[in-house]
Image 1 (tube, rainbow, N blue to C red):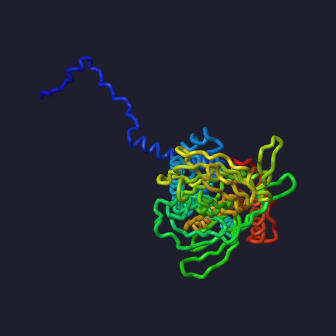
Image 2: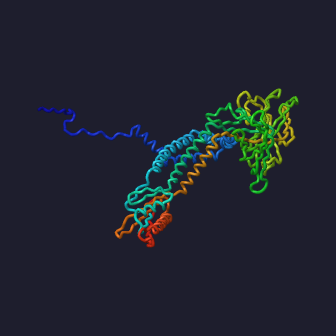
Image 3: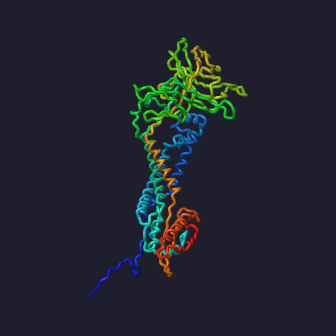
Length: 541
């Protein structure tokens, strides 16, 4: 018989071929590692912390979604810093890409962490209690005593004593567990947190927020062009806004006039008339801070107020060409010194523009400069700068800015009180400061997910309470016949959340069981059982 062998011509030494080195994780391995890392509870906590940390700028810096005017004031007061902050969306924190990325990662992390945990807990609830350990003496609480009752009787009485426990029989012992609601509360809390995130996201996608400025005596219709700034959700139909209208009948602001808090706002009260739809009945409402108007699912909030000085402008021929109130934006809230722009395009000749400063309570400071000492209108005055030329109205521009390029300056006015008239140089006309009105800055907010969000928050609190106050516990009772013919009972308890030495409940169970067995002694009911001997160890947590 002939055998043939095939040799490797490259292996002339007879040594075994070298084994290949270990392979890398590969795409699937890296994917599993990224998923495990993302769905870990540690990552979820880090993302939750990052979400809270990212919200800090939104609480400190003015936000466009709340008040465009305050953002404009911040740009004016911080011309170098504000553009850099704007590059990182710090004036639109809650709609910024980086905040949305954290939000989305947190949602995925919680979902990947909680859903498997809920499935594991569902299996644990249906599973039998753990078998009785061989050596009960290692448990934090152990009690031993003898009784004349039979072992079966002792175990039967143990089942009765362990009310509220889920009990399972194992040979010469019973095992009982309770406190499953603790983990139920934990899972419920995290699912409620997921539901809350979903509700907030749904409100952002389907709702909208809009800001508007309404002068006393003027009205507002809930249409897209009526808003000064509007922030609709990605799936909001801007052609189907709720058709309500509102009229600002009057506005009253009061300020603290004495003490260290002088100048701080005391109350804002706006009286409004509104209709839920064209042709509907008119209704009255008192609008105050934190007391919004709720109409057709939209909440209208009062954010603040300001002054709208009233002016009359006559052209060179003496014709009245402008007569209305112009909103001025305040620089800060302690004096309400306000800046504004008056544009008069229809003069019958060259267009006129004015840049003004309104002082609610005008006084001279120590250096002789005019300033406002109080936000209330105790001595209202105004100063103006006049310009003549092309206002550039053909191009989009802010109503609060005057483009003076290509315009001729006509000089500065004297300080004007109510009723004063300034005759413009070069017979360009005149302007009269006739008085002032107040305006209210309002925000409308439609968020259909408010009630689901409230429900999710309530469930989260309930789950947290279960987690804090429900204590998972395990109890084992073993009953065996001793050499003296009596039944030896051994009871052990394990409280997973108690501090060391807190075993009062287990001791009470031991006393109840011993008392029941004393009355169940078969041979001699009057013969007392031996008093229980209990030992307490430190918690093994």
